[in-house]
Amino acid sequence: MPYWSIYCLYCRGYIADALLECLPASKRVAAAYRLLFRAKAGAAIACPYCNGLLGFDDSGRPQAPQPGWPVFRYGLAELEARKLADGESAATPLAEWALRHRFTQPGSHPPLTEYTYAENAPPMKLSREEIVFLRHWMYDEVHFQEGSGAAKRLQVEHGVAPADLGILIAAAIPDPAEQEAAGQGPAPSTVPQWPWTEQALHTRIAEARASLGDRQAPASTKVRATDA
Image (cartoon, helix red, strand yellow):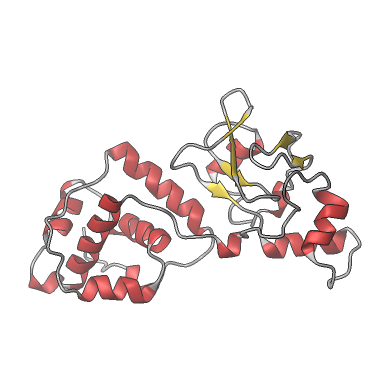
């Protein structure tokens, strides 16, 4: 495990052991995980004390992460397993275990009291323009038999696989009911605009994959095998 240790930029809690082995296994295979492991720019971890997001600059100094960096969070199951390995009983609250064994030098916040675990991570945040386009595209996908819609044509023109947009939808609009409502309509009243450069889309897809981890995309994001 990594040798780096840091003070949180926000709460000043001391992270002597990053406990990266307690990130979900599905997250530890991501390319961005290696950046975090080596204290390099390009990934962020949620502080176990205050939940603030921490990244590194190119020199390994802690900094606030840049927009679009994948965020890693501790898994509840992994922390529970570590607690037992440290000799605590299953009934011991994680916050008590962490303060005794792992995150022993809090600043303004005790450890793991209001923490957002990987299993409860919030949906990925997209810009308004991205969300508007994806809603257009979901409508076009559901109504493909009525003809190719404007958002669908833009997707094809840019050579983007439908599955890639499905990943963005699963990460940013995870509620199947909300997806279904966008697909059923009524049709959006605005003209869709393609909101990404090629590099920006690649970054967004990587961020979405990191956000989803081992969660499955809702069924309504699946696309027809015949789509471009």
